Structures are given as structure tokens and as C-alpha cells.
Length: 98
Image (tube, rainbow, N blue to C red):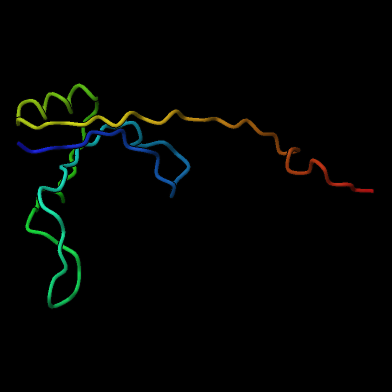
């Protein structure tokens, strides 16, 4: 039986918006360990499913897919989003301008 991990996609650090964040991703867990290639020395394996990453709009949709395909899943809970409210004047606290 194959194993998979379901997690909620985080916001990209390359942009300020939250587009695409909040969707749920399903990734297969590796079925065999990676081993070094004798020619190049790169790590790899014959398991091509670990290259697959599927996106779903909801956690229920991801779980339904896993159930239909007989996958054992581990759901990683989403991290709480911490909002730090800060004013521009806070950048200058503790600076003596006299």
C-alpha cells in the first residue's frame, strides 16, 4: 500500500499576495531509499511517484482522492498565520534624534 502526505500550501515568499495559498497538496512518500548513481554521484531512485505533486481545493477532496486510490495518508495540519501589526513609526523607536 502506498503512503502519501497531505498538507496546505503556504504563501510564496517571492510575492506579497496570497494567490494559490490555502490549496491542499498531496505528495507520495518515497517507496525506496535514494542511492548514489555510480556515474554522476547524484542521489536518485527508481520510484517516480515521489515526483508527483497533486493540488486540491479542499482537504476533503484530497482525502477522497487518497481513499479512491487506496493510499494511506498523513495529514499535516496548517500552521497558524501570525499577523504582526506594526506602524511605520515603530522603525524609529529608541532612536534619539537630539
